[in-house]
Structures are given as C-alpha cells and as structure tokens.
Image 1 (cartoon, protein in one colour):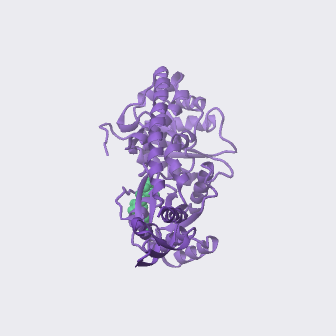
Image 2 (cartoon, protein in one colour):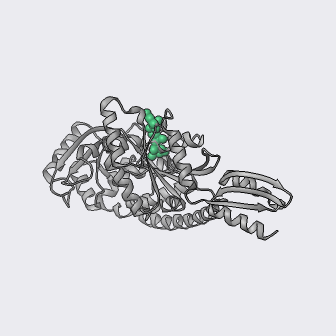
Image 3 (tube, rainbow, N blue to C red):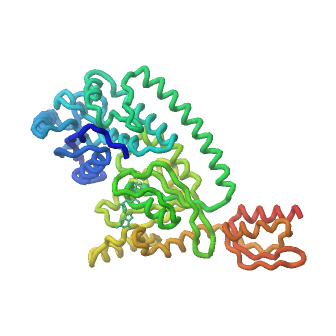
Amino acid sequence: MIETETPPERAYLVGVEIPRARLDGDDSLDELASLVEAAGGIVAGRSLQARRTRDPNSYVGKGKAGEIGREVSRLRADIVICDDELKPSQQRTLEEITGVAVVDRSAVILDIFARHARSREGRIQVELAQLEYRLPRLTGRGKEMSRLGGGIGTRGPGESKLESDRQIIRKRIQDLRKQLDEVARQRERARGSRTSEGLFLAAIVGYTNAGKSTLMNALAGSDVLVADQPFATLDPTTRRAALPGGATILLSDTVGFVNKLPPTLVAAFRATLEELADADLLVHVADVTHPNLHEHMRVVDETLASLKLEHRPRLVVFNQTDRLRGEEGDALREALGAEFPAAVFVSALNGDGLESLRIRLAEAAAAGWKRVKKTLPYHAGALVQQIRTRGSLKSVDYEEAGIRIEADVPPALAAEIDTAIRRR
Ligand SMILES: Nc1nc2c(ncn2[C@@H]2O[C@H](COP(=O)(O)OP(=O)(O)OP(=O)(O)O)[C@@H](O)[C@H]2O)c(=O)[nH]1
Ligand SMILES: [Mg+2]
C-alpha cells in the first residue's frame, strides 16, 4: 500500500445514541474507530451523546458541539468524524463551532474504498460515488475547510486529490458514468461466456472482516488478499473449486457489507454486486465470535434485500470456530445451532468443518440435477469429460452403438446431451 508523507490525521469521533438504533452507540463508535484506522487516521478521542433524535442543525446538541470544540483543541485533533451521514448544513454548522474539518462515516468508508480499489472498474465506481457524495457538500465555509484538511474525505482512488470545483465535478461525473457503462458492457460479455460454461456458482457474502476471502482461499486454493481490517476486498474474484464426488463449482468472493453503508456507494457498486444476481447459492459467512453477530447478520440480510436477493437460496456459515473457547463457546455454538439448524460451523483458518461445508455445497449443486441414462454418439465423446467436471458420472461403457453413460447432471448439461444425441 502507498503511504502518504503527511503524518496520520488525529480524529475525534462523535456519535449520537438514539433509542432503537441497530448497534449500541459505543459498539458503533468502536466500529467507526476501526474504519478510521483503515483510512489511515488515528483516534484522538471520542464522545457519545444520548438523545431522542439527532439535532437537525448540528447533529449533536449545540452545547455538546461547543464542548466537542474545546476537546478538539485540547487534544489537538485535526478532524471531527460523525458516526452518521450528515446533511451538508449540519456539517457546516459543526465546522463553524469546532473550527476543524468535519466529515461523516460515509466519507470514511468512501476513503477506504478509494485506498483499496485496484481494478479500473473499482476505481471508476469509487470516484463516482465520492464525487456524488461531495457535490452537495461543496458550499460556503465547508468548502474551505475540507480543502484545508487534505486528509480523509479529500482523497480519490490512487492517492489522487479529489476535485473541488463544482463545474469540473459535474463534467467528471458524466465522464465516469460513461466509462462505467462501457466497463459494464464488457463485464456483461464476460458473464455471458461464464454462464455458458454452465457451472454452479456459489457467491460468498457477509459482513466485512468475517473471513470471506480466507474461506474462499481455503475452498478454492486461491490466494486472494486477506487482512484484519474492513474492506480488504473490493474487486470480485471467481475461482473453481473441486468438491467431493468430483464435481466442480465456481466460488466468488466480493466486497463485504457494513452497517450504515452509504447509499451512493451501494448504487455505484451495483455493477460489481450484479455478480451476485447470477449466483445459484449465497454463502453467508459470519464471524461467530463477534459480539454483534446478530446485528451483523441483519445488516447482511437487509443489504441483500436492497439488492432484491432476499429469496435466493442461502447457506449460513459460522466462521472462526477456532476462537470459541470453553463452556461459553460451546453454549454459543449450541444456541446458534438451534437458531440456524441448517448452518455449518467452520474455521477457515485451521480447516475444521470445511469437509462438511464442501459436502453441503456439493449437495446444493446437485439438488437440481437430473439422472440421465443415454448412449452418446462417439463424435460427442468430449461430453464425457464435461459430465465429469460439471456433474457426477456413475458409469461409462464404450459399446459398439456408442458411449453408454449413466450420470447425474445439471439441467443445462442434460439439454446438451440430448442435442448431441439428436444430431447423430
Ligand atoms: N482465528 C481465525 N481468524 C480468521 C478466520 N478466518 C479469517 N480470519 C482472520 O480474519 C481477518 C479477516 O479475514 P478476511 O478473509 O480478509 O475477511 P473478509 O471477510 O474477506 O474481509 P473484507 O474483504 O475486508 O470484507 C484476517 O485477519 C483473517 O486472518 C478463522 O477461521 N479463524
Ligand atoms: Mg475479503
């Protein structure tokens, strides 16, 4: 990773705890702290205010804002980061009261995405989301402030500095949309050729840092980047994995989800996430040891619903069982087993449970298969190898009339076999 020369920004975190929020305010600030660190900042201090609602003018109450301003100068913080998406007017008010740049959780997430985007498509998507987020916020004093900072919230993909001229931004947004359309068309073509391969596709989804990439590597023998930080993975990767019984499936690893994911980001990543629409099975990986496990699972469910994928077949995988300890660990495992009877428990790290998971994936892939007993013409002999990789070959006999096979195969392959026989 490229590190900038400037010292890390000292961030002061601010949250508002409202009744019935998904995460406890402190837990949510902990998560914000890990996001800020992934964006290269350090946390100088934090403050949580319990209120019935967020203040429409200044997010926290006016008095609290003044207090935060004094803390910020005492701790020599460079930037205030609020845990919820701010309206541009709230941001301006807080900047006036505290005297430093103010950004929100969305800006931090966008910043991490900009740092981690590698592919052309990833970079276009991130810059587009960043500029769309930025445009309404470039007015009055906020503009001068965010220009001063030069840190979180001002960096585009590849350490580029984000544009701050509204005219230029509008033009750039148009350009990026066009480029994205072009990349999306290329992706569509690539997707077409993969679908025609006819392999079962299992997509790994889940909260960020749950161990999705580690699991993908363990199942597919790949070496996708793994890191103990949010949003290590941005670009989707698809690999083949061989399963018990000899069948091959495709596994894909993609960007993780997080609480309060900025809507502009979800919209911009629609193309990447469309990969999920092709999936025959969604493998939902959750970190079984996380204190907010249930909340994380709910965020994943809601994000999938917002992508209209709530009815897709799903397999829950509780990962990181190697970190469960003692009686407490056993009790948790038992309770989750009762709550999610179909779930599989694994450790992607030490391999526990992976064999059961492979069997479950093989069963899911075979669920829609058809039993065929046919005699293939010899010129269609290549289909035998197809049956071996895409289905399960029970028997093969090379007879005078042709190749006599008995096999379980996916419907698409059954159709190919019929076509080959009709063509004899
Ligand atoms: N102890 C233990 N650690 C694990 C396990 N699986 C993953 N990890 C660790 O958890 C951290 C996150 O793993 P990743 O595979 O990068 O997680 P991810 O879900 O792909 O994360 P993002 O791509 O950032 O959303 C890394 O430090 C892994 O080494 C596991 O089964 N046991
Ligand atoms: Mg990952």
